[in-house]
Image (cartoon, rainbow, N blue to C red; front, side):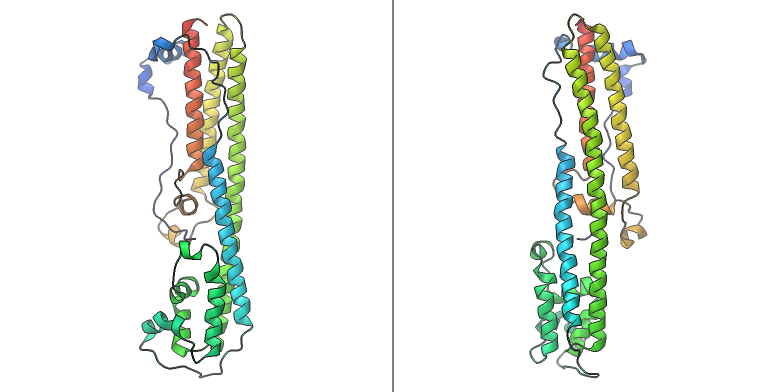
Length: 318
């Protein structure tokens, strides 16, 4: 559940090299250039091209977010339960200690082996094992010892205090409870931010699906035109240009969201890293780190391919 990471690059939408068109920039020149790319298929039909994209990148990202949401919820509930269990314990009296350590670092390393003579500390460690360290993904994602986990999640001074005293003091109990509650609250906040991303993915998928449906309808319309259909093909070519522009607008909207993430960890904010939230969600996966931009790029490429085929149809006179 580590949100911290390094710098990120935006996944760009690939555009055709403008110099490939030469000096000519008019509509007829663009159509002619597209037609000469592959003269052998100048009369290729549009039949069979009107297929829907599946938007796998966006859907896989939503599935990834849902799985992470469940993991974070499990951790939140574990910390809440740990706080409740520690809160119910009676602390040792003032000045109570259990000797046997050589310095604070040795104490931290051996806190999970303490407790043979102290029921309170055994109860704390057992509660931590049964809650925080028992979430289903703990070993795969963290695989830390009790002192390592206590230090990472609740502060190194917490583990040191427990080990140094060899028991649960009133101060240690208070720190454990309050910091566990803060850890649970932080995860609740993270769940809310993941929910925002899931909703954003749903909206972007809807926008992309709308563009793709229009693309399909245009090609189906053109395929049903009898005769040369030159006017219809020219109209479809122009409308496909408009769809590519819509893809660019969707990409720009996503870029704005990437620049203003739902949350930014303090460490990432200090280093100027504003994509840490998205890297936290998507970098560990095999899918694109910027799934929406990757999906827009794929759709825009499909639109450009369709437009070029329509241009070749125009050049071929059918």
